[in-house]
Amino acid sequence: MAIWIRNPLAILEEEARGGLLLMGDRIAELVPAGAEPTCLEPNEALEVFDASQHVVLPGLINTHHHFYQTLTRACPPALDKELFPWLKALYPIWAGLTPERMQLGSRLAMAELLLSGCTTTADHHYLFPKGMEEAIDIQVSEASQLGLRVLLTRGSMSLGEEDGGLPPQSTVQRDETILFDSERLISRYHEPGEGAMVQIALAPCSPFSVTTELMRQTARLARRHGVRLHTHLAETEDENEFCLKTFGMRPLDYLEHVGWMADDVWLAHGIHFNDEEIARLGKARVGITHCPSSNMVLASGICRNLELEAAGAIVGLGVDGSASNDGSNLIQEVRQALMIQRLRYGSGRVSHKDAFRWATAGSADCLGRRDLGRLEVGCQADLAMFKLDELRFSGNGDPLAALPLCGADRADRVMVQGRWRVIDGCIPGLDLEELLHSHQQAADELQAPFL
Image 1: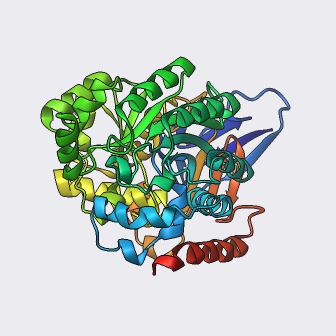
Image 2: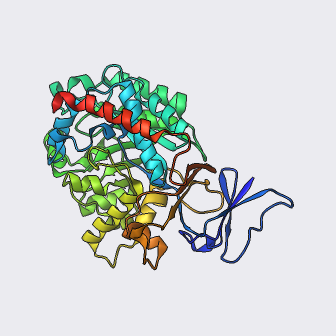
Image 3: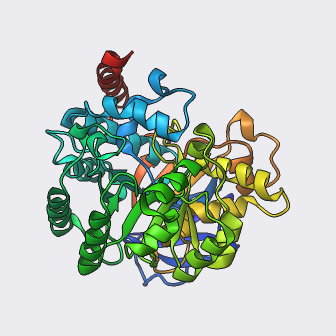
């Protein structure tokens, strides 16, 4: 059955003021203001959804997260620290992950994302203590049950404390183990092409947590299978100093040294690049995930979004882990991106539409998905729809601008692949009360030995 999302209150596409015609899992027509769909077959069944109270966006896309970190929000040992000491405080706690804790952490993170208007999310999981060898498999299962589109990155750490790294030895793996499991996950789960619901990418955690050879081998493996590459880079000045001391070069030079400077790569954070490095990133069409909340919490700095885009690099948006955000709410991250980028560039150079672009088309391009993040004919029927019926929105004159400026935090309707996944602000079939209880209990048990 075709669905007409009719006459939205506002929509992030001027040519669709009369709404969208959806057929199956795709957008079939943009309906102009005052018009009706024209590409229906005679007598074809049509469901009409009155969107006159809704602001309609392409489904929001989260390009960097760590689902498991929902279990260590506002964690006392990690409060008021910058990145390296923050990691040192949390790694021993995260070493206690179990399959059940991973399941609950992932389910809660994805539910929170869905409710915030997110229809596609990447996750960067790089911790594999004993018993957690199938962490990514757990994420695939949870995403399938919720109906969320995912790009799950097989992260890795191979340098523990004994090798000069930050994490405990119990959380790292041997290079050959990492590469073998990476190939297993690609073979088992990766769906190539348009409309894919589950994709796999390869993602060594950072230059200071894996061997140089693993960086090179991971790139070769990814390109042999046609999957993307992801890592943290240039998040802090400490990282710059580490790379200069360890490799004799800055992080971006190291990235190029190991064969990663290409358009199949997207990087988390990307804060501390100089002008020459930004030009090189743009020339290579590398993607950068802007993580405003995390960068503020850890005092890491502000990503240079406008210079990166002007140079030709791609800029997307990410909530980052829920231990450094400390949330998984993507529409709130749109607001944070708008505010912090205005702080850098001025209010006249950054608009709400820039922030929406980073969370939609920019994020889609980071993930190599031209079929997502756009309200265009042929793109996937992934939508985020918000009502403005709360006190915070009363008095607004521009419904689109009101979402970030007035602080939207919850979608009313969310569609993924042409199917409603959030209805009236709820996820059908999800016992939210039970999830909250079980998740908090798991978090308490994980943190208890360190409090």
